[in-house]
Image 1 (spheres, helix red, strand yellow):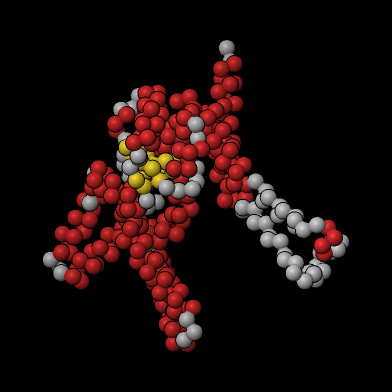
Image 2: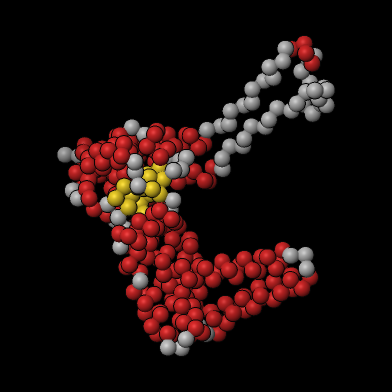
Amino acid sequence: MTIPTAVISLALVSSAASLLNPALALLLPAVWLLSGPLVFHRSAEAAIARFLLGMRRPAPEEAERLSAVWEEVTRRAGVNQGTYELWVQERAELNATAAAGHIVGVTRHALDRLPNSRLAAVLAHELGHHVGGHTWAAMLADWYALPARVVWRLITTVVLLLLGSRNLAGIACGGCLSVTFVWFVYVLTFTESMWWITLPVAIGPFFVAWLHRRAECRADDYAAGLGFRDELVAVLAEEHRAQTAPPVPPMPPTAPYGAYGPPLPPGAPQQPGETEPEAAPRPAVRGAHSRFEARLRHLQRGAAGGHRSAGQP
């Protein structure tokens, strides 16, 4: 599904090379195609982790703890402990990330909150992404789609700025650009019969989102297969409860009852000097946390299936 986007990126790189220098029309696209595997070089991975993902190398005390937990995970998995590097993200969320080709990042918040057993389950999940090839596949897809995404964002930004301007000429230019783009896609799809490019590009994001959900379940299965099912279920359940918990109601006013008289009905004007209590934050949208529910159900189904298989003669 990402190959058509890579083809568009290749065409953009070739066009840019032709505009710069016709002699580079073949050389620059070839260099760009061969540059994909270079992102898995250790130095390139470190630069990606540090500058794009905001990671840092662990402090000595963090490295000591992570090394002990990681040794247990890799021992169960039969993986060389030094194959992957552990980094830390300064983020206030309970999360870990399988980045680049050989990097596993864990947030400082997870280090502070999780005991070693649950931290091992989270790291085992990220190891499952690496072992399953999810990380390098996503990395290559993002790299080869980068030129097309940059141009697309530039076009949409310019069109939105023009349509949002108060200048009539700018709005007209934005409308003309929009119509031109739609007409170009129509001609490319139906007149030139290049639907094999436009159709995957249109439906690709939905399919890739499904693949990401599937990869999460596969990584959960990998961690469960290493014996971390209960710990991973506990982590997901706790995170789900934390993000879907109802808001805490505001505290009542501390003034004595007689200071302002009896409580007023809703909507009544306030007494002088009385302030409106601060509104409680709205609960988070349920759809944003459905992935926790889906992963919990998947792990619970796997556990139930394992118990039934174990009970068969």
